[in-house]
Length: 595
Image (cartoon, rainbow, N blue to C red; front, side, top):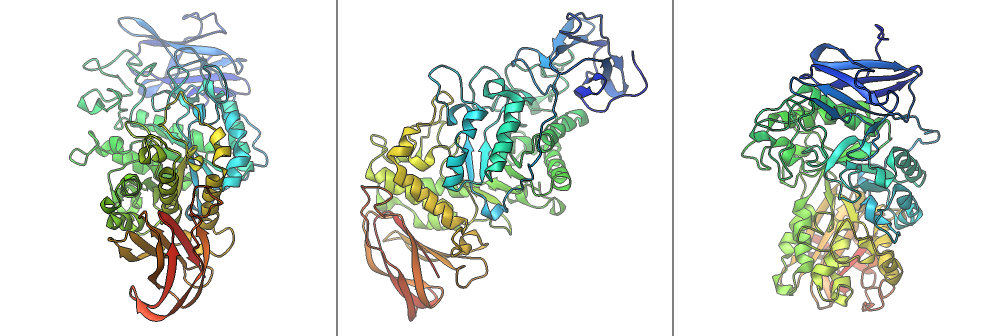
């Protein structure tokens, strides 16, 4: 029975008296709901036409767990479709499931750390802690089993690779078939909420990777959803001209259609509202704001959608972080919307990862560019040092023809001295340069090879390289100023004051306000030779305590344990400072001093 009181929302909407259904199918002649509750009978539950191509039906007494689809009648045929807004599906080519979104969030008053204090750990649910001996993937519960480890490491934010329902049982996740539904192989929506609440109880934020530059392309019921298309392209949810083309198929959403824009916005609001997600990382935004990934053919519909998304998030969920993977060195991506920017909180920074990887992977010392390292350290997009995410490994940087940093350094033995020394040299740059540091799963215990969604992280290496894990933990501790004497590492200001290209030495000063317990000096040797009594300028007179020496043998029994010590800044100008001091440093090593 249809009444004049209609339930708001899209998809299947559970309410006290039953379930309401609403779907957008503007080219349909008729639409009905078929499901386990009416024996999949197309004539049993017809929907009523609303304005602008929407269809609606309220079925009394229907409960969560019922399976259903839409039966769409077109002039030529009848087609069955999974609900685009389905919060749950049996599998990517199965049925939608009426979902109960309720969850006990009591006690979950978590707030993400200030962005200048964030340490992000990117992981893939299926391989992060997959300890099964069969073909099944890891699950949200298996990540929860490692939360205490991540907390001890110092991680305060996990970035989860996409978890929208995808084709098959294993995937990177960048082929979303149903963006509102959580991948069944990982445990589904309830397990995801349980994991988020557990992460929050450990003081760890959860940032979700989302994909809106394309959908699918496989197992995609959105394709020609209500039977209509032009040029045999995707129909109502997609561009039906050459703007549909992406590197992943002809499935770019039509950012100019209000119903499609709202579809994407609703998905974002679901993650932030229903799932208590603390932030979102947007995949390949250059293919949202441009047609071909370059600046020569902009896509204004996409740009205005990104602005709308970031404005809505800032107004409705203040404090949540949005991260763009744009990789085009475009400062407007992280400029404020009021200034004409897209309004993202920060963006992945190719201006850091590529020169730093080159610097540590290059075999011959003379071919390392310290000027490129200096530029990578000081680069910023706008007025905020933390509007970039900096890293040496990510899911992209350790696949697609590239491998983990230790493997790139020493292809035949990614555990040798060179691999350990130079990969930790890169790590020290990540945690001392301005920006939001990010690790990729297993990086902290020298995971080698390259990333594949079928190969789990080798947790045995955590025990083999327990000293390297401690090195990462010590760097994170300094970066977060947990001992109260390294505040400058989370400060806005950086100055590379010493750069010796011939001897491959670089030193830089980090500070927030300056002074004791704030000023930090980082000294790095990118050469395979130690430096004894090396003269450096120092930004303040007096005693400088050595807080970190990456060559300490406690980090690895093959390190040299080079006898670096505290230093003292004395009068006498050097490096444009009125004071100078002497440091001794091991090969491929980093020293961190503070006052």
